[in-house]
Image 1 (cartoon, rainbow, N blue to C red):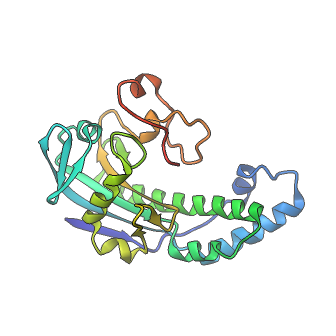
Image 2 (tube, rainbow, N blue to C red; image 1 turned 90 degrees about the vertical axis):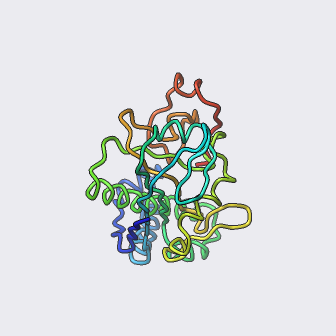
Length: 231
């Protein structure tokens, strides 16, 4: 598999957007603190991402084979739609920001810092999607993530990580025994081209999810076995 590692991703925070997302517009003291946190985060933050260009095979109705690794999901297989080329990906806010976040003990500041980490992960996702679109110019870029839907459970995370091998460690991401990624603000999955376009959010009814990337589609959700996503 060919691979692309993106480890020089600019992290520029729109402080006004951050303040608005935290609903602090009428709290000057909090705005001052958040502005300082944002400044520190932009200095420290090093979001990173990687993806691989791989060939997919379909040995069974609920199995996708990539580089001799088997992924078990009927929905994944159906969504890939016999696509030959798929792009397993991994992105993260970065170990630098994860370590920086550990110093905060105040519950409010921890929430603010957690939101800043979400923005850092968003920067990594944006850089990832931009790189894929520039290199391969796919039609609608779709994605699925293990652990977000019942049909592709969190246990499949380990199989996906086998595809990344040592490259995951190169961007600072590891998988715990409980199948959680470290840093916590990381995302894994598979990008693929689709005429219709698909992301897990279309099957997830959790309205106020901060990571929502597409509206919930009730009719589509009823056609698949699903649960609320792990935002």
